[in-house]
Image (tube, rainbow, N blue to C red; front, side, top):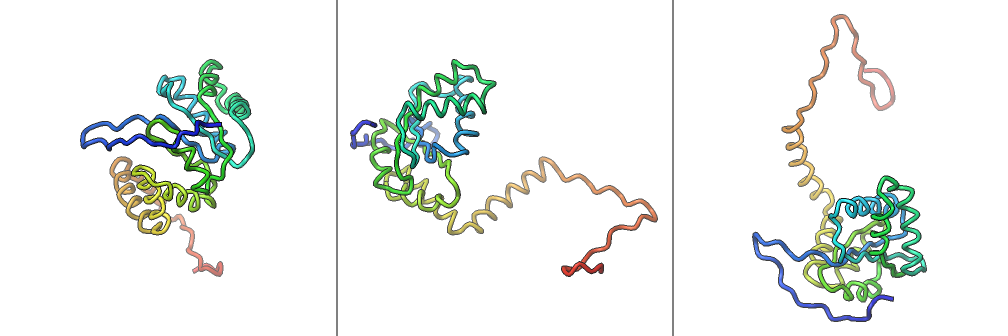
Length: 207
């Protein structure tokens, strides 16, 4: 079981030009899913090997399945052996020692509240969830309160509601930047006398 402490330390956000506090807890929602096993845990193992994963970071996996720390560590070890075999055993084992597990409903603010509040410092939230659970989970994070979580959840909710606007606002500048960095290749000239394919109508007829 996680510590029952519920008080959260007061901390002010960093000023402009200053680096904010390093997260002390990584909250992995959907810890038992395929995304976590195949991608996130192997990525963390590579960070561990590179010396870029803080030793003090606690990684709390949250999922609907019953389990405890030892069971989650065993599952993680098996996943790392399969999907991050290139990382040596010592670093994979070091990562597993940082793992903890809580069985909870990721869409319930009441279930998530004691988990978030047990953290000693900033919390980094990773949603390794199917899209069908995103809206309910983000709403639960919004209900938890706190500047960071509220801002994060609100941004995701607005992005979900105004998906078209946010997609266009991000995609257009990105497309322009990519076009400038990597211009599209010019189309190859059509050889003389070579017939190009004729356009077709929606019913399949050649125009």
